[in-house]
Image 1: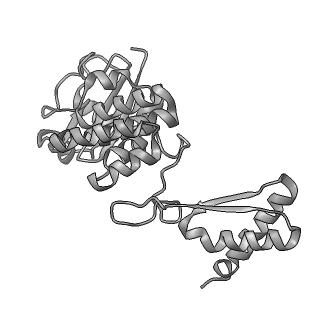
Image 2: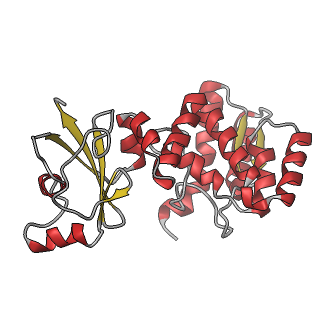
Image 3: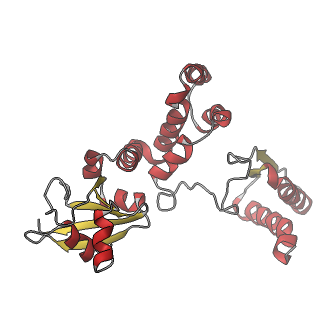
Length: 264
């Protein structure tokens, strides 16, 4: 056990005392695993000040494997869009298993209990539609990021999982960066007669020489969700280049490149 771990209850107790003295804080809220730390704070404040303070614990939210969710475990879901995008938040909840989705609907949404019961009844009849998970994801995403955040999450879902060109065309630069966080971005000028091979090489997406050429002919390259196997195909506006002046280039299974075209 490290010194920090050993002193953690005392440090958290002092935090509560400081907040009580300087800000009038009387309630400390935490997960069930924080019971000991909260009790330490309760005892310190009552002994030092004689004031009546309170501690509240709530059930822990766990993953499908039973592990605690949180930054310490490395699987935290954040309310800040810069850390967890609306799409990532939506996907987190839409992937929840049947054995927890009803509990999450009660914990994280303001839906009436009667409506939740009806949703679960419909799910029992048509489990393949994932109705409770989709409703849970929609309600939480809308609560955290508003209706526009929910629409953003749905656009990203359509673009990534349904290869929807229409959704890609409607996506903002922010949404593209959120959806493809590891993607390389490049700005290119469209030259007359520019081919798929030219695009891939200018974006440094394939190696020079025959191996890069074969990468395309072997079906390893797609543009806007459509596989391209002819390296000499000339780029066409509206097909390879979307209305928003963007092309989404994928090489292999996970290597994405966001191409922004200048002066179209």
